[in-house]
Amino acid sequence: MIYHVSLDIDLKRNPYEGRYIALEGIDGSGKTTQVEELAKYFESQGKDVVRTREPRKEGVIGDIVQQVLTGKLKMPSVGLQYLFSTDRVLHHEEVIEPALKAGKIVISDRCFWSAVVYGILDRVGKYDREAADFLLISQSILSMYHQFLVPDYTFLLKVTLDSALERISKKDDVMEIYEDKEKLRKVNEGYDWLAGEFPKEITIVDGEGSIDEVTQRLISEIK
Image 1 (cartoon, rainbow, N blue to C red):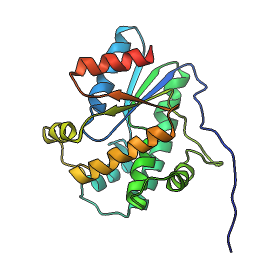
Image 2: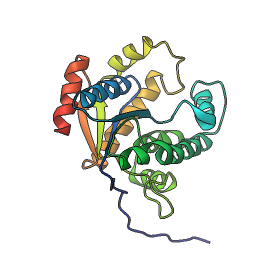
Image 3: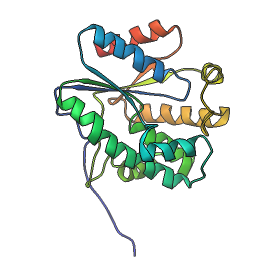
């Protein structure tokens, strides 16, 4: 039997006083660095800032996710994506929404948009609207059951593959399963596709140049 499902639903907007900023991009694009730089900027303006990331590295779920990402634990890609979603539910309820309600600025290294890019890569490897719609619903982004708050600002840091690989090579952390050139190329393609599909939600920012130059570009977009 074939079931027909049809619905119209928008992204869930932030209704709180605080502001939610997320940085997206391939590994090595400078997200983690710019989260810290933006936090310093807003703190210098007298703002309360919460720095965070997805997926989280701590907690029961975060620990399992990190073991999968570093190749220490094998898991089907669908199972990994559901772990991401479970961690995201807890993350929003425990960290993001309380901070926004309190009027704080939340700056996150990745958000739910990553689930679309990496989820499509893991499932079908081809970026198109049908695959994206499936992920948007199953990952609770366009779901009638539960939705995550969409960031007020989502910035996609764009760098070349060579720049990303050079930065990754200098990391002290264990290499993750997505940090090879071919996967980075596909993820980069996915982010380009995503930004084209959701231009009102995702702002592309040049991630090349000095740390301060990139930070100033981000600040100018927020202003």
